[in-house]
Image (tube, rainbow, N blue to C red; front, side, top):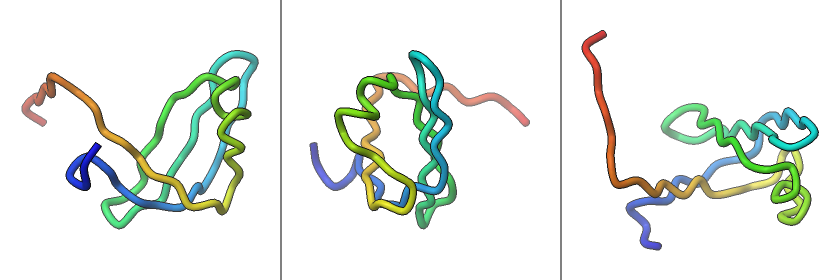
Length: 66
């Protein structure tokens, strides 16, 4: 990982379900939402108000006309 694919922020909300959870991160670029397994959420010990990093990993990005 390098600094170009990481966005630092603070956890704003967490919506937990049985298998999948949504984590909203407030960043200088706006709100980023990540979908992770609830198991990973628990393993990482993520809680509202905690600092976290959004790590972007992709091989493709699609854009469409608005």
